[in-house]
Amino acid sequence: MTRSVPSVRTVAAAVAVVGAVCFVSLAVVLVPWHPVPGGGPSTLPAPDTVLSPEQLARAEAYAGPSRWLGWSSLLVSLAVVCWLGFTEAGARLVGRLRGWWWVRVVLGVALVSLVGRLATLPFAIVGYRRRVSYGLSTQTWPDWLRDVAVSWAVNVVASSLVLLVIVGTARRWRTWWPAIAAGIAATLVMLGSFVYPVLVEPLFSSFTPLPDGPLRTGVLELAEAEGVHVDDVLEADASRRTTTLNAYVSGFGSTRRVVLYDNLVRDVPEDQVLSVVAHELSHARHDDVLTGSLLGAAGSVVGIGLLGLVIERRRKRAHGPEMQRTAGDPAVVPLVLALVAVAGLLASPIQNGISRRIETRADVDALLATHDPQAFIEVQRQLASRSLADLTGPAWTQFWFGSHPTTRERIAIAGWLSDQ
Image (cartoon, rainbow, N blue to C red; front, side, top):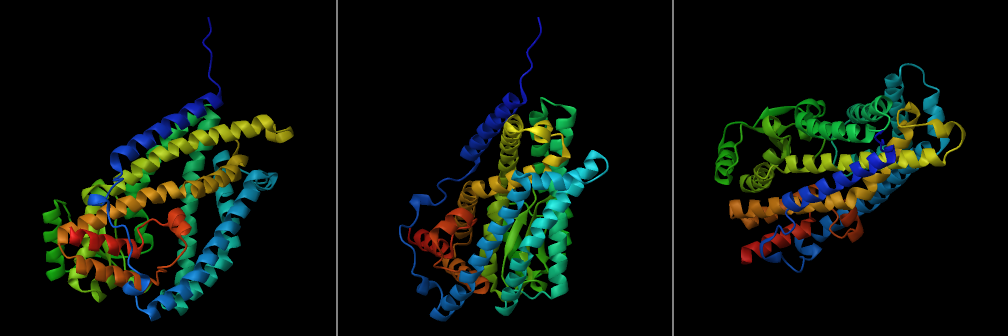
């Protein structure tokens, strides 16, 4: 009696279901779905109570065209990658490449990515020039072009690793490749998040320990009060690129780091800097980077499963050479990149909705830790003013693309908590 072997579609469907169950389970347990005690404020402050009329007018003058630039660049990028991925154009392009299969995969990723990058480069150039003219960027042309090239190279390396896993497993395990590739992809997501602070961030910035002084002492005392172990707080030389203010936490475990922009340290009063630090320490205390990595790993499992279903469906419906094209053929590289781009756009509301709740919890924790809502409100005004944040932008863009609460939402939460 012979045992029946499942089809690739069956395995892929099972992988997608398992990934979805894991994602939903992790989200239910780890995401703070109600981060504001008592439900939060029902109204937002008027824009002209947050910034002056002059600041609002300048922000709107900058943000309006910038949105159109961003949307146009996104549409062109999607159009190019979909043209290459969903027609025979990309497959023919990659099919002309020669060498071992893994060489063709890497070259295919580089080629498709380069075409997309060149197609959107005019939008990026206009965006760079506008940032310089509005005083948001301090970069020279050579520095900016260097960052564009490095970003493209990092994207090629990351995408190539994923494509090598997909094509390599499909060549070795014709039926079970979605399950094996999903496991490896999830591992790569976790590993990538772990090593990102030490491998990728140094390509763009230099980091030094926050100097001894009252601010460093205040940071360490705040970390102790919040129950967060901090080996060091780093200062990034961000001012050589931008005038905007920021801070962030990256990595987890032994690579976790709290990073402050040097202009935040230099230009903002200490109580406001500590409010920002308290927000970042909340991320560290709740292991939010680890949470995002776990959700990303589960999402990659879903993606690999759906990818297997799409590739098999297209192959069954194809004629001629397309019918022989499996996931083990390097010619599928453009198709995979197109599917990843479309899936990323469609998944943005889910990803950013989760991010906004995590960021809101960090705001709440910062307010409770510092007991200084006024410093929190003032630094939010500073952040909005320095970045030319548009306080009156379309609501749907915040829903789809906003990874943080809006400035008005954050200030409203501060007022709400101070009144409780």
